[in-house]
Length: 244
Image (tube, rainbow, N blue to C red):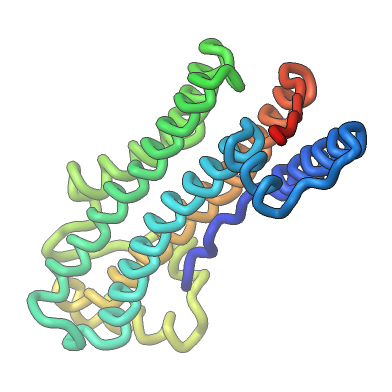
């Protein structure tokens, strides 16, 4: 299982094409033709260019965290396949990886919060809209805080014996894996005895949470891109001049 990386909203590219066409029209009106260097300078110094560059940096920061989460999933999958494949206690390592995931997950929210704040600073968002978008993250992921608290602070699954797993998780396994895991639970129902099942369970939880996050983030990215385009349409007037 590998979490897919985020992509910049396609709307931003379409908006930049409109920006480029308007620059071209301005050059026609001036009776001149800009060089590639001049066009690059227009882009780099313009609102449209800067906001798109910041969008790409934002997506890049989010993808670096997703890359780290994929490394965690890879380690958990390796332990699931062979508990002796890594040094140290496999139970402690698997629990550490799982706990670390939540720290990385909530970093995604903090990075988005900084980007939203930046858009408000350049007047793409009003302060009211900024606060609404902040709240949307808490509303969308409040239940994940509950899962984090149950799994980590209350130690719901971190028991020494009588380990239990949700039926939805067990029925979602392929037949071969389900047979192996069922046998482990029946013959050695302890944390040490079922570490492979626990790793599979952690992978399942992380994958489910990230699936929800990616859908939300895709919609959030499209919404912010749309707001940028609206701002460009109604609040910006492109003025081009050439110094001879």
